[in-house]
Length: 108
Image 1 (tube, one colour):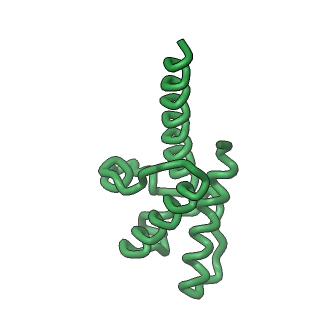
Image 2 (cartoon, helix red, strand yellow; image 1 turned 60 degrees about the vertical axis):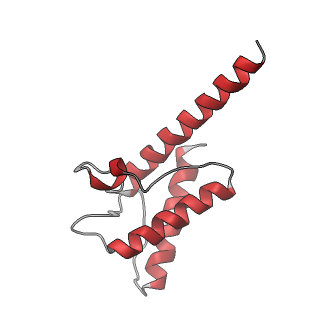
């Protein structure tokens, strides 16, 4: 999956949250998700993660956003849209690599 598609999914979920909060801002790849300038509180962050994970499940890709790595490190991938895009892209690449390994081994 291309990074642009991943970014669009995240931005769409963030903009959905902003509209639900009656905020007049639009997300882009530089938008802060967690941190000092974020508009997302902890409960909304959980809902946002579920919405993003659900969208990927609908596209037949399983990702995990609620992990110690994603939530607790100082350089959290949840910091900005762009860092979350990279985090999800890496997960999808690992998923694709393991599928290739399984299918490749089956054909030997």
